[in-house]
Length: 147
Ligand code: DQA
Image (tube, rainbow, N blue to C red; front, side):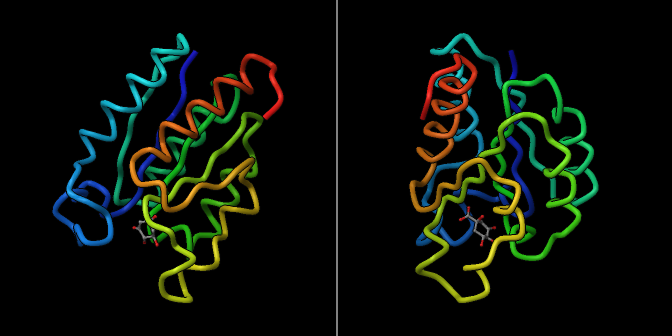
């Protein structure tokens, strides 16, 4: 069973981009953590990043049915994209929204998320560990266990 871990715009620059907010670890470090965490539950990860909204929408379509779930850090599209919300609303699998930083202690425009309306759960401020927590939760849901 596979989990889609989908990263949006500017996350390719993780580690270099505003390290005081997002830390010094790279997206490759996040990917390694995701793979290791999923493997511990017998799951695999399809790890993707795109700066383009339509590529993210296509990825959601690829995993919306039959996968073990979706972990999405939509970056700034979180706060702007009705199209990503609509794509996530087609999902029959659980969707976990994940943010590296605690968006609620940042600018007001980061406090609202369109995609939360389609999210099973939301994580913010856990750094890269948020992704591992999200995968752990998807594994629990997959096993039919309660939260
Ligand atoms: C982010 C928070 C967003 O507000 C921002 O636009 C990002 C990253 C996070 O992981 O903390 O690009 O999603």
